[in-house]
Image 1 (cartoon, one colour):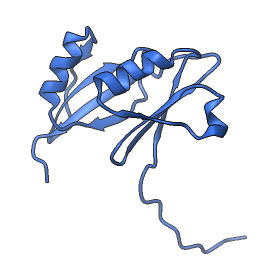
Image 2 (tube, rainbow, N blue to C red; image 1 turned 180 degrees about the horizontal axis):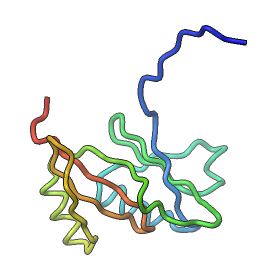
Image 3 (cartoon, rainbow, N blue to C red; image 1 turned 180 degrees about the vertical axis):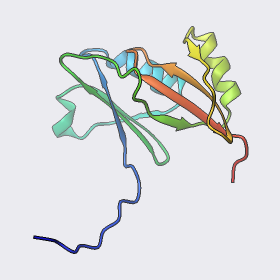
Amino acid sequence: MRHHLTMSIVAIDHVQLAMPAGEESAAVAFYADLLGIAQVPKPPHLAKRGGCWFEHGSLKVHLGVEADFRPARKAHPALLVDGLAALVVRLREAGVPLADDEPLEGYDGVYVSDKFGNRIELLEPLEWT
């Protein structure tokens, strides 16, 4: 049976990454303190599960506790950055390892891993439109 529905996926609401239990302070140190993405409260019915949420404008990054945690090493979110050079300096000063790769056309970029080993791409457009 075919359904003729009109629909459209319009955007990503949030990105969820996994983290080990009890490491919320390390998540805050990386995502809020280093990357500058503010921590926001989780809804009460989800808070008991652990983890933490971060938001800046339309960017939403959720970290959820995974019992048998293994970091995402290939799969990753790519975060747009305004001021990548300054962020790179901040990350280096904090001892965060950075990995260069051939950037996407039209972008400058670098890869980092959070405190748990999750891979994150940081991109800055060469020209903002």
